[in-house]
Length: 315
Image (cartoon, rainbow, N blue to C red; front, side, top):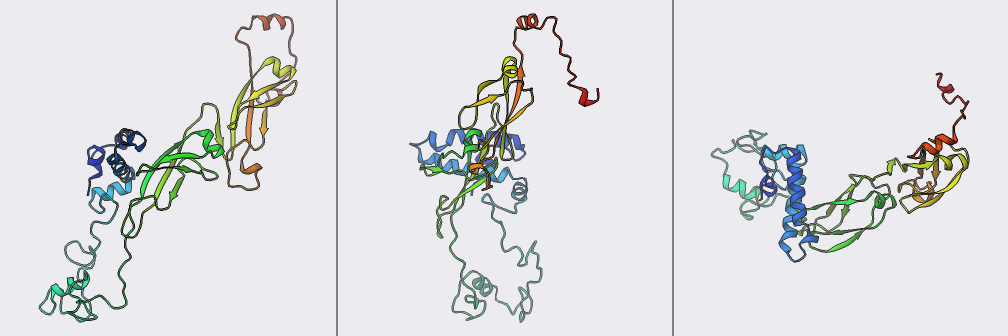
């Protein structure tokens, strides 16, 4: 069983930042998209991802460091409560026993009964399978963890994504409504194979930020600069959305800070009553003065605005 620290090539004293940096470097090198002719890379990519998932979880990392779980997250001593050094039940003395380990108890029979050996020795007792108990079902294979970076625009509009699995196969992935950074998707049967069937693929979504869009619940906000003459005289201007640019009508005399609403141009939402399963885009208008103010200053010479825009603020 591999050591997650060795798998990532970091020391046991490594910080979270060092562990994350090591994982990113290895993930770039071993990603199946870059190693289509190297089947071993997919397996190593899976091991590296599993190691990072364990060490990036502070609780699991502490349990592993204490020896309580192994690299797969399984308990290292599932029978620790049955007595012996460190056991939680120091006596483990079923009725009829003279004392655990005493003359009246055959330890060989005991352990054969626990682990399925000596089936004909003591029917219904420790020598055979306990009455009324069934053997546990075959264990499924381990889950495989993936991280998928999704652009802000794709997440908002739920555009289909392509993802390459550890076995080298590429599939289309439909993003769920209301997807956000940290959303986890489960791909049934896309994990490692095991006696009881394949495990699942667990995809963690990482939504990128955007240069001028920002999410506000189910809505998307942005600031749109307009010129002074567009604000004074009105105009039709192009406004970007996650679905492409649209024309926005600016009324004459529009003030800076005015918020305009574009219905159904926001984030995908689970709310069925919203417009087309989407929130809205809220556009805040910002009046932008020209870089060369000389011409404007000449036009405004001897003109003064007698309004009191700050009177509502009590100043």
